[in-house]
Each structure stands twice: as structure tokens, then as C-alpha cells.
Image 1: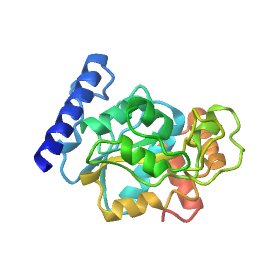
Image 2: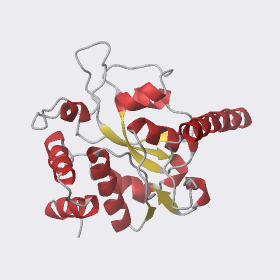
Image 3: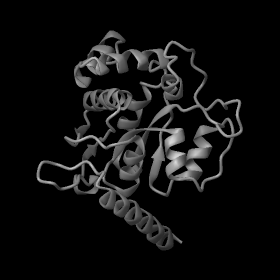
Image 4: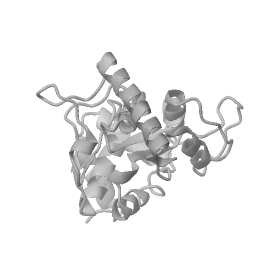
Length: 227
């Protein structure tokens, strides 16, 4: 059973890697090579797409993980879209990336949806070895709709439409072997304070030209999450 699961996972990962290569959407280093998380044991390869909200969240992840004693590497180039980062994590190019429920389900559409239960829905959509960690309060759908000051429902609350069964909370998507208990605890510390209004403020600062790393560190220090 384990061998067949491994073969299935390798086949899926190879398929996603092929899509990335054919599309030319992988984040490449200066020499044109693509980052592969498995080639960096002991290092969390953290990727992001080019949107300001993803860059903000990735910078928060990098800061708290580094403070927890983890070694974090971020590819120089951002991925083109959130869907590309999902594919990169599944393919093993990244060990960690910010992700969103609707994006993941569009990339991996075959899983069963459980209205009101984001964790169960994502666990059924993801291949073995890839995990969706508990989500933050921030709902990126609210940001896309232009209402960054809106309130936050609890992560995983269901929407009113049968076509949109889940709030679009941001969460860490990871290769399970890349994150130990200390890394998971550090990321979980962001979930409650990272609300929709707070992510909107971070996004606005980065959109205005502020450095994501500096912005993330300022935000974390102001909340006692970083010394």
C-alpha cells in the first residue's frame, strides 16, 4: 500500500512539475535553474506569488520561522500566480507557500467539498505528503472585493452560495517533511492576529513600495510576536 501511494504521489508531482516547466512559470534562480525543496535538507524553501498580499504573508512566515531558529530560503523570483505556488509545493519545488482555499481547489478540483469545514475539504484535495496548516483569520476574498475593513468570520465558515462553500482564508501550504513542530507552532502564532483588516494594511504598505521584510518585522514587533 505504501509503495503504491508513493508511486501515485511521484506521478502527481511529476505531472505538476511538467506543467510548470511547459508554462515557464517556475521561480528560477539567476542561473536559470528552478528551486527544489528536496535538494535543501534542513532548509525551508519559502515561495510566494507576485501579489502584494502573498508577499506580505510570505514575509511574515519568513520572519517568525527565522526567529524560531529555522533556516529559510526564498527564491529571488516570485511565481506568477497563487495557482503556480500551489503547483510548486505539490511538485516539491517549494517547501512552503501562502495559499488560499479557492485557488487550491481550482488547481486540485477532484476532492470532495465539505461546506463549513475548510480543513476537511483541503485534506481531501491534497495529495499525500502535502499539508494545509490551520488558516489565519484573514479572508482574501474580502480584499479582492475591496472591503478590507470588513469583519472576520471564523476560519472555515461557509459562504452563502453553494458554489462558494468556503471562506477564502490564507493558510500555509507545505511539504509535510519540511516543517517540524517548532515551525508549525511559529506559523500558528500568526493565525489570530492576521485578520482581514490587518492583512489589508500590510498589503497597502507593500503596494505603496515598502519592503515586505521590513513591513512584516514592523508589524510583528508591534504585536509582540517578534523580539
